[in-house]
Length: 163
Image 1 (cartoon, helix red, strand yellow):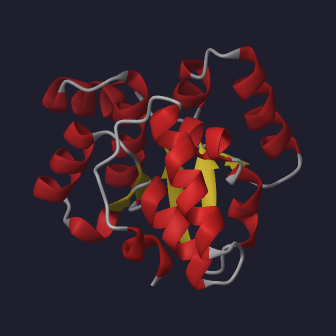
Image 2 (cartoon, helix red, strand yellow):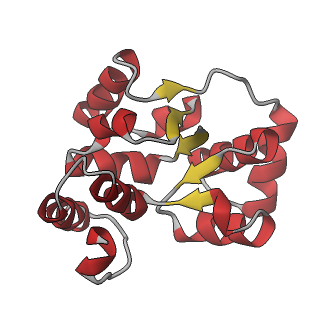
Image 3 (tube, one colour):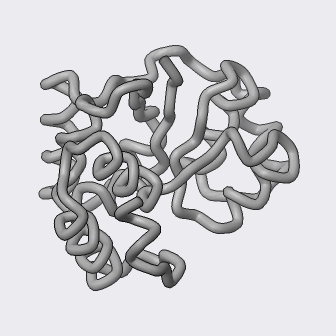
């Protein structure tokens, strides 16, 4: 089972689209959230949804501490936000996959670790359809809600989400 650490933008996008509770159902992945990412989720309603998902076991809390040097090394190297830096530090330490919709973070991961070490909320929508956990129409609607809610996601052909 692949361990996936969620960054703030991807987890917020999944909360907005109403798919966060489906993460536990996706075969092959175990989803985690770190302390700094949780702290970045400032919207009270969204944070309550995330905390409920943590208490219900939908997502797991990454309780393995990072040292200050592990975090600082990543933060200084990439000049990303705290949450993205935390996720990449866990990738460097544990070999996790990072779920991020932050383009700069994705480019850093791809350059230094490879394409196999990240994906985003669009991949999650696609995987939910592939595993027959949501319909194609639900996936398309989820993507639209993410964009309307302010997500900076690439324009995609709907067939990406449904194949």
